[in-house]
Image 1 (cartoon, rainbow, N blue to C red):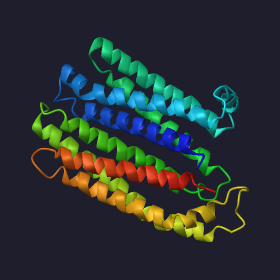
Image 2 (image 1 turned 90 degrees about the vertical axis):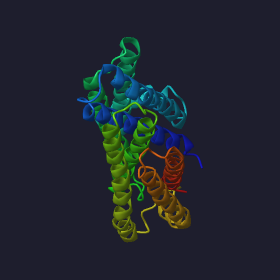
Image 3 (image 1 turned 30 degrees about the horizontal axis):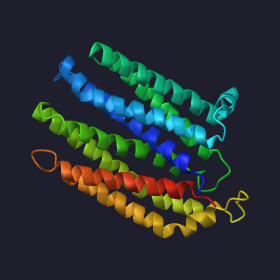
Image 4 (image 1 turned 60 degrees about the horizontal axis):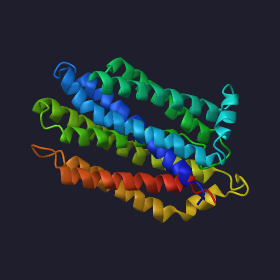
Length: 281
């Protein structure tokens, strides 16, 4: 397996964007209930996590290029290359997130407008990232499923980070914390259901793909068929992880043990599904 850098890169960037989006949502949703200091306390750990994950993701992506300086050559085709666009928007996203985080650390206040801009840049970056694979010649990637997978991963990981952060802030107004946790849990459940419901469409598409659709030396359709059991286990783990995370929200306080267990299961499932996605030999 030669694609571990891509697995790590895509998951770290999606974790970063998800954390940024949900942190921004928390700041906007709680604008009337939180003062400047409370906003800073609830947001800064998640912002730092998002920046570190994004920076590590970009660093990992250079390993896939073979020679790090090739990243500069990739930028020369921004008008025609989704890879070039992805590099540009990933850099803009991380730059805006880094600037916002630095301002927050120095001034002890969060510029919500900058977080909104960072979130939008992250969403665009994820579109470019997805388009790289959708517009490739690999049959198992050339489907709307790629967009669904990448964006729902953002929502799933971002929701778990947000619930984790809420659970670590016992000083938050109870009603606000409860509403935020329930919304995040609902988004996690919805993202999982969307992925499961979209799978029959994806499988029907693959069933109708010609067996001649092979990109030598790769055989994505063969690899996909051979990993059926592995994918099924990943889907089961994802479903259980989502259910356990949802159960952590049923008590007066967020059950941290259940939340940690559910989050680990969801992350494990995401890694397994991404491994299957990139296995094309």
